[in-house]
Amino acid sequence: MIPFNVPPMTGKEQHYIEQVIKNKKLSGDGRFTQACQAWIEEKYFCQKALLTTSCTHALEMAAMLAGIGPGDEVIMPSYTFVSTANAFVLQGATIVFVDIRPDTMNIDETLIEDAITDKTKAIVPVHYAGVACEMDTINAIADQYGITVIEDAAQGMMSVYKGQALGTLGRLGCYSFHETKNYSSGEGGALLINHEGDQYRSEIIREKGTNRSQFFRGQVDKYSWVDVGSSFLPSELNAAYLYAQLEHAGGINEDRLMSWQTYFNELKPLADEDRIQLPHVPDHCQHNAHMFYIKAKDLNERTALIDYLKDNEIMTAFHYVPLHSSMAGQTFGRFHGEDCYTTRESERLLRLPLYYHLEEKDVYYIIKTIKDFYKP
Ligand SMILES: *Cc1c(COP(=O)(O)O)cnc(C)c1O
Image (cartoon, rainbow, N blue to C red; front, side):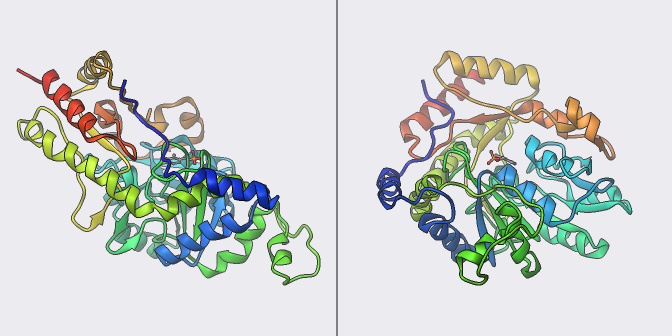
């Protein structure tokens, strides 16, 4: 069986975790957490990065930092993971879903302005498959209306938009280190703080509403409860695992891009014959090969293809059930405008196996099996 995903491992993880155990410092914000945060800050020219327990929690912190409250509206695509919406619903917001572009599966930037009301507080672009949303347009609209931009860059680490790293383009950016993502700590994430005004409060929210971070740096002589907050910092064990992968991020990225490019080149003839569709990466975007997907004709053909691949020992995956058609989505949100592509495209999309160290012969076997399925 070729699995759909294998969590990334570089070989150094165990060694770093042993160091944590030997140092007898297992709670958060130790050496490895600091090292991961410094790595992100230096590599992506980011003002401040904080490791979190998940991207879900990074999004929750972002919603708190942006001051989202009851009655506020937050604009995002419906084609995304539940956490994108939940983080804002937890603060009492109403979600306003807009349609996606069929080429990138990202929010259609031309539909955002029409969805803005006097209650709109934030726009949350989701960089699907690590391919950037049209951030210049989105930031210009946000500036014009005085709205906050929070990037769900869960899938976007190591991707670039016009020379700038995803996650550093909005006021706040959120990464995921879940085991299904390119770089992993099992469960984990990071919040990127791109405005100086958010730096102080972000540390406090992450440390249970206390100024313990300042206390550790010797800036105050005791710490106490100063604001709302929760426990959003990961253990050093998770940070140690992650650090091994950040050190090797370039290699992981190249390895994934190679598999991605093989899929793309070899499946191109099928796409040229209009049998399937392939992902589109705009010229000004560098992606991180988070995902390789193809689009079948419709739901029926996709179901048949999944079964065929499974019979041939290939595991695939699809997502998302559009949030506006889910039970919670109907309670907490509304779709603005027409659903031209969200539902239709989500039913056609199929994700192929893609992970660090996916063997080239497996990629070719998967390609051949897909071609067999589409043989006239
Ligand atoms: C994976 C993912 C998340 C959630 O990440 P966790 O680290 O599992 O909380 C949020 N948004 C998107 C778009 C994702 O792909």
